[in-house]
Structures are given as C-alpha cells and as structure tokens.
Amino acid sequence: MDRSRELRASRFFALRERGTDARTEALGGLATFLTMSYIVFVNPAILSSAGLPFDAVAVATALAAGGFTIIMGLTTNLPFALASGLGINAVVAFDIILGRKVSPDVGMACIVLEGLLAVVLVLAGMREAVVRAVPTSLKLAIGVGIGLFIALVGLRDGGIVVNDPSTGIALGDLSTGPALIALAGILVALGCAAANVRGAILIGIATSTVLGLVFGVLDGPSAVARWPTSGDFSTIGDGLAPGALRDALTWALVPIIFSLFMTDFFDTVGTAYAVTSAGGLLDERGEIPKVRNLLLVDSAAAAGGGAMGVSSVTTYVESGAGVAEGARTGLASVVTGLLFALTIFFVPLIAVVGQGVTVGKDTTLHPAIAPALVMVGYLMIQLVREIEWDRPEDAVPAFLTIAGIPLTFSISAGIGLGVFGYVVTMIARGRVREIHPIMWMLVPMFVAFFASNWLSAHVF
Image 1 (tube, rainbow, N blue to C red):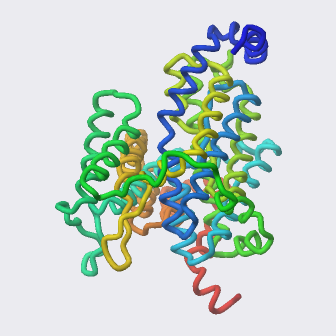
Image 2 (image 1 turned 45 degrees about the horizontal axis):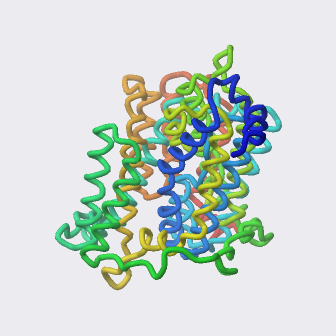
Image 3 (image 1 turned 60 degrees about the vertical axis):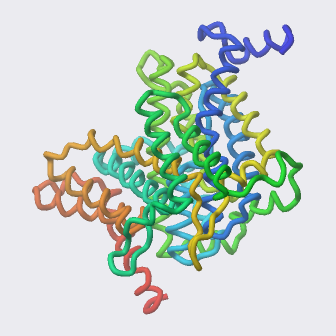
C-alpha cells in the first residue's frame, strides 16, 4: 500500500482514532481468515451430502464469505467477518433437504425467506421485541442443542458413530482408516484448544488430511489451483426461483424458517457483543456502535447465502481472533474478505479436505472435516453453564431442547419441544400472564410442524 492510499485508508477507517494502523489491521484480518477458513472445506462437504455439487458450493462459499465480509467492514467499520454458519447448514442438509425430502432449491429458499424476515424486523425496529420474547434459557439451550447436533454429525462423518438397526446409533469400528484419521484430528484439535493454541480447528483438519494422504485413506489433489469454470457458479440463484420460494411456504417448513431465523438472529447479537466488547469497541452506553447497520448486513447476508446456494451467511465469533491481534476497524474485514475471495482458485485443494470416503453401499464419510464439527460442538456446549437449572421454567424447556435436537436429528423439532415445555411449565407455575404473545404464536406453528404429514394427507 503506497503512502497516499495508506492515508486515505487511515481516514476512511479512522485508524488513528482507534489506536491502530494498516499493518495491524492486515495482520488481524489474516488471523481471522486463518481461524475461520475451515468453513471453505466443511460447508461444501455438508451440503454435498444433500446433493449439492461440491465444487460449486466451495466457490460460492468463498465468494459469499468474501463479499459480505467486505460489505460488513465498509458499512460498519468493525472487524467482523461472515461466512456460512455451521449448524444452519446442517439444518438445510439433514433436516430440510434429506429429512423433509425437498429439493436443494427449496432448502435454500427457506434460507432466503428467513434472511428477508430478519431484514424486515430490523428495518421495522422490532429486533428488541423478538429478542425479549424468547426466554434466555431457551436461546442458550438452542445453542447447546445445535452444538450436540453438529458434534453428532461430525462423529458420524468420521465413522466414530454409526447407524445401528437395533439401537439406532452405536460405536463404529475405530480400527478403520477413516475413523482413525478422524479421531487423530479430533484429539489434536482438542489438545490445541486446551493449550490455548490459536487455529485449533484448522490444525485438527490439517492433521486428519495429512494422515489421510499418508496412509492412502484420502486421494491426493488433481492440481493445486485452477480457474473456476461455469459449473462452479451453478448454485447461484437457485434459491430465488419462484417455484422454490412457493414450496418453502408450507405448513411443514414455515416453523423451520422461523427456527432458522431465531438461531441466526440471536447468534449474531451474542457474537457481535462478545467480539466488540473484547476489542473495547462498545460505545459510551455500553452498546455496539452502528448496530443497526451490522444487523442489516448480517440479515441481508443470510438471504444472500441462500440465494448463492451456500446456506445462511452469518457473523463469526472467530472474528475475535483478529481483534486479539489488534484489529479494531473494518479494514481488517476487507483483508479477510479478499483472502476468502482468493480461495476460489484453490478448489482442487479444498476438494482433498472435503472428499467423501465410501465405506459401504450407502455410506460416505468425510473424515477430514470431522474435527471441525466436533470442535464446534465442544465450543457451543459450554453455553450450558449459563442456564439456571434450579428454575423449572428455565430447566424444563432447556432440557427438552438440548435433548430433542440431537435425538430427533432435527433442530426445529427440538426447539418445538422446548417451546411446548416452556408454555406448559409457565402455566403450571401460575405465570400465564408472563408468557409473551410471540411465544403463544409459536405453539400453533409447531403443532402444525409436528402434524405436517397428517395435514398434508387430510387437509391439503
């Protein structure tokens, strides 16, 4: 960066006012990219399990992360990075597309709709009302349940947990190649996390990948880099098809869309506050500066992720890695976004990490990404300590949600059970008047969700 450009960047991003410089912001942006770059490997592997093309999802994931991260930096001047959210992509792949047996286009249309719902609520100033409506215990429990759900997906992808006709699930054969390299990556990642080594998730992925290549479990790359082809952009726009949007607005999917919105929305608020607070960037009132712009970009990114076929794009807590390196402005986000954009040329290497290993007639594993999924589950489950377990109105819905999400293999079903548990417990405790109207509105929505097959057969 020459002197004149540096001066313009310094003025635009207010580097001096925030006590930073271009070099520090660049290093912070690099740190954030290295910490969250695992999503470029993991997202295509998860969504390709539901029938989406791996290479196209990899390219679109990088483009979406790069584009919306740069927009966030320029709009808010905060060091936040965005990418496809783990958890929501699993909902799209396993709950909506495979579980509800709908097309990938309809799955992505659900993401578009939940993003648009978030945009409307932010513009209408109803954000606070929605946040207040859902009990804190239920919000925390959703995060914990999703963490267990993601960990279960990771253990299954590593061959460590397998389907069993008698018990449902069981311990897999840990002497097989895929299970061994997945387990090695998981243990290395956990060890790095325990030792406070940054980039633990990426190190775990690298460990499994290298061991897989050394022992022949994974095939080597066909090339290091290549130019994207027209097929690499094939997922873009599918979620905007009128037919897909129409099919997403059904009794079976509307509660899922609302569940996705709640998960995405609350996760963003919590992430933004945590990262901003860690960087000392809260304003004099203890609030996030330009929070409306932040929420608008994040909400638009959710819809944009659906439109690009990569699931909801959301603000990442890994942005804290850049803040820890001294990043204080949106310039760090611009650097992170540009690095994401560059990865579209390295799809052959990405494909090595995310490749599937066939171990049975209908079973394909992704052992190199298993460490990332298990680690995300480990990080998310730590929210459980913040739930007030001595209060039944908190404990009952939290328990039903946390148990329901992984055991039904459906995030929406788990949230529905939690909503029912909350309403019943509040009634039993004689606190009916304290139940927010929005929570009452969720009850018939989830009744319709659970009865969707009956409604389809007898009403629609």
